[in-house]
Image 1 (cartoon, helix red, strand yellow):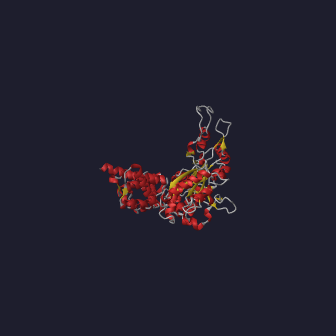
Image 2 (cartoon, helix red, strand yellow):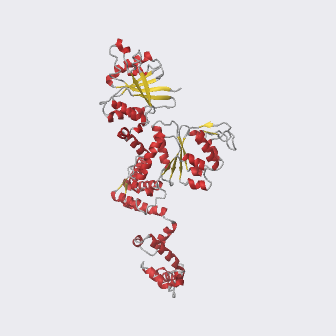
Length: 541
């Protein structure tokens, strides 16, 4: 049986005892609360201001006489204006935030009979948002009972999301939850913001599995961590977050790592091991790259999800683990199912809440805010404040949001780029030259090797300013032509290889003339390219 813990405010009018000899003939909310035959209040947290300390002590003494099993704890909480929504909500919110709730051992009730209507509304909101993880209780006089001091109670378990007008008035709490999931970054991408809005609702209302998909580096691990932290803040779980990269679970050790094993279960099992599933009991298990799991591990995971039990390797005795699963993958699991690599029944179980995180290149409007976030993160980590100068920041944002920026590694690429810029910045200022160097570094990492080679070939014949004016199409085509010419001693021979198909359709091929005209478009001559011409130039020198 759980203990009953109640939070209540002193009623400065209703709890007032008046003449001491008459106090038991009067209905008083907090006395009534602790006088019920069908409700034992094990602990009562009574909130009062500094003007009501004497009244609160008198009520506590009377509660001790009618309910000796109730432990009354008094807390001073002053409202300069008990009708001010912002002040009342903020102070009750802070009180709940500093209180340690244990929902496994206790049932929590918020007594809403005392206090102003503003206090009652705020208690509704705190209960609905799970900042107070319990229910509401109301006391009232019972005119059918001869003992007027007892009264009656009503426990209320409301879903306040139905009261749109009231919920909208205090939507700031949901907004804080969404911003927490986004890491405090002011994102502008409409799709991503809608995604986070729904994830925030699911995170605080559901314990079912969640599936996060999207390319590598899109932020699946970070989002899973923040979902766990949000649930923890709302007292929805008491366990830890266990993060596992399934790509590292290979071979016969995969089963033991996930589900644990007994001592001596296999060669090398010198000690028993709990395994990741058991370690995540009452918490969250994040299985990143779940598509990498073997079919046997998938089958056991499905059983553990549906029954909350599983057998460690080498054990005939099942163990229990009540964890919430968050799975991540950059694979198309439906294709994996079609190819026989992923179980359809497991997919059906984990995709109740499936969210695809967009790639960074699809969220270009969010790049400036993420640049600021990464710079601030570097400052906090290293203790050195680094900033862009205005021209450098404009240059980097211009490149980062252009089509040239591939961001193949998504946020990992951006984080690495900012780390390099901050580290190499002299006098804690990132300059245009720093940005140019970083852009070159990123291009070399992103662009295919053949395009890098293309640029290298052109550098032997054209100035950098000329190359910068060429389209990617011309860069690759001209590079191929020049590479071909380098293998031939005559223009005719090079032309025959380059125009190997179209020359057959002409009555006179004239390959040399076609090649000469093409090279002249770029201000080049055969003598600039021909290996024989170069040899002659060297001898003359």
